[in-house]
Image (cartoon, rainbow, N blue to C red; front, side, top):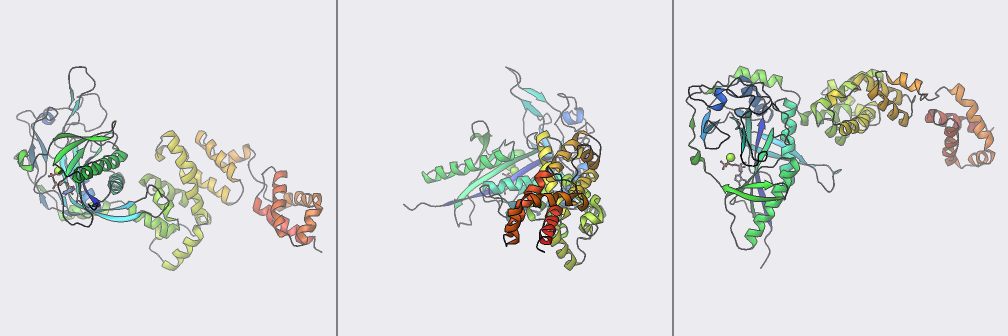
Length: 520
Ligand code: ADP
Ligand code: MG
């Protein structure tokens, strides 16, 4: 029998906790990390006689997400009750949106990097969004802290979430990974969530089915829950795809069900048979009026959106002349991109070439292409290298955010300038950077104190260059006889005598000049 090839079909439902001060429908604090049951009041516990009031900030944050992903915004949407029983849901229902989500029909563009070949240009793909709606979170049942009982923490009850439902457009576990990373990047750029999967502020359910490659039909799917890292999203889907292929190949049928990902054993296991929408007895919440969104409010929010990561990355290439790879890394986080641009601006006109070309990104096309050419080897690239090298390394080693780095843009720019003017060597630059993490002085003061400034005036270099030539008459003769590659040898000798503390370009220029002088 011919072996049928299968292709996976994946749709993701992502839940994202919004960074509001108070809860979705009550005034309790929505902050994460307080002691158990420190943030509960009668509304979040669903006591009879209490009334929910919609948090305006929650609506605004949801709209930011909808606008940033090109969704249609519903001028009127409804909050609905979704009923189910669970100990961490004391009201017996969750307030969500059902028939009329506040946002629908947008998209997210992903760039899928090949794990085997990470340097290659990533593949671009557009993933459709079915909807984005608002809902409240449930509390937390803790099963592993008491030998007999399940403990309940209601702090999370009523904290605001958005649910982002994708179209079944994803075709590989890798794309699902890239999609979740992109969702995280977008919510962080927008400042509406920290997008932290490990702490549960970003969660995801993956719907997975398989079909014969080339088929347009959709087949029965399963839903995987409980993946608490980006890597686990990818792994769980990989596992589930092979499980389904095994079932189908052995003549079985995939059954619609909800599965749990067991990260320890790296496998999925059944949790429950899938419930249908009618099981939830959805109906509009009679305690809450519809949500109206005025056109003027949308205009205001649109105007307040930050430059989004894709646009910013493209501008970094176009206006600063950076390689696409650098631009992608520097724009990964909004704070890092700001840090980079502040450093380049702090370099000033003599450093940054012609002022701040990034700000006139859409200005004269000709001049910007030319600027890009130069920038690729110039000051901007130098700043990029420093950030991608020393800065990111320190952030990774210390777990510090860029905002907490003691070396602020002006001092990094001063360091970059010393390097650009060849007044310090690259190893010295590294040493000075490390020192600046501990101290407040500028790089020049540190360089002088540690004797790291390179000798860069011709007057004091010339005698030494002459002495190198005097000491190697045979090599000089060979050079003059046509073996010009020997210039590298002389540079090596000279740099050794200076113990590295000389500007190598100046040394080379002087050497060539003195060698030529010896022809006569
Ligand atoms: P439910 O109400 O059961 O959660 P939805 O229609 O809301 O179902 O779809 C949930 C998710 O399932 C969406 O992200 C959607 O893209 C995805 N999905 C729908 N059909 C399939 C399929 N055949 N294979 C994989 N994913 C699917
Ligand atoms: Mg669903």
